[in-house]
Length: 211
Image (cartoon, rainbow, N blue to C red; front, side, top):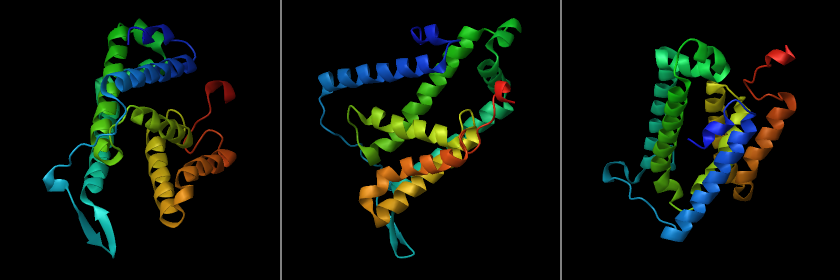
């Protein structure tokens, strides 16, 4: 976070490139220390196994992961929309100088946001590990779909990202059901289709300069 401070107040691309580069360095360090062999976390017995529904087999753990994700999304939304600290975070994202003028410690706020975002990523990694497995480049594998979802939903739109995530998941799953070789390509085709008609994504808004 100390190194990331140098990117504050500049083009967001600087922060994006810095964190992506840091992720690649961490990936290589993991590969050197623990090797590149893939490992899997054991699923607790209570949510292990599968069940039949409508003639199809469903994994209990995948339903648990989906429920956990929905609960986490709701908690994050409540925190951002219904708490004073959430209001400060949104204000700091839109106008950091005004937040500083109001006497709010901007460095402490940014440190909290960094830690909060890192914690969310850690929770997501723990939940997805039994499905995706653990390997050095698993984080980078998740970065591309994540950015695709952000662009698809509209940069800065919370519920846009949620809807885009559901759409991408459905597109990949349904494509894999009928043409598995096209499953990963389907999310890129979905992005092209949406951006063709809505350049700012599903819920993207015009900036002040464009109004």
